[in-house]
Length: 106
Image (cartoon, rainbow, N blue to C red; front, side):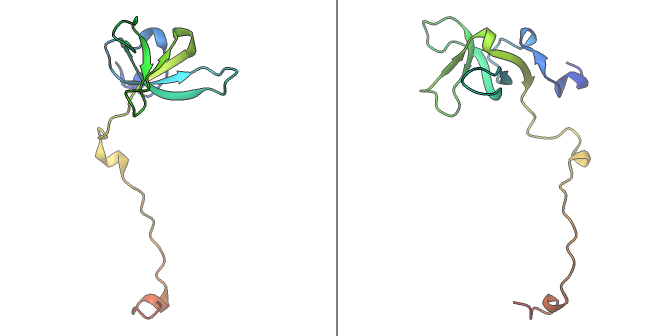
């Protein structure tokens, strides 16, 4: 996968079907606007056919998505940036208050 593809939404037809968790776009419907969820290709129950499933944080509450419900996918972002220098946290310099310089501005 090229660098350009990593940060862009891809058609669901190209999504990995090996159990890898990915971000998916759920199409807008009468139940609400489009949403993003984390899903993987798998079986919601041992006897069920494979489909896109999401379990949120509770494996007892599995959501099965039909192919037509999902529009796009994207890999989950990495927890560690590739180039740390490009991900510096922004820490603004705050002006020094003259009353607090000596600790007297409590």
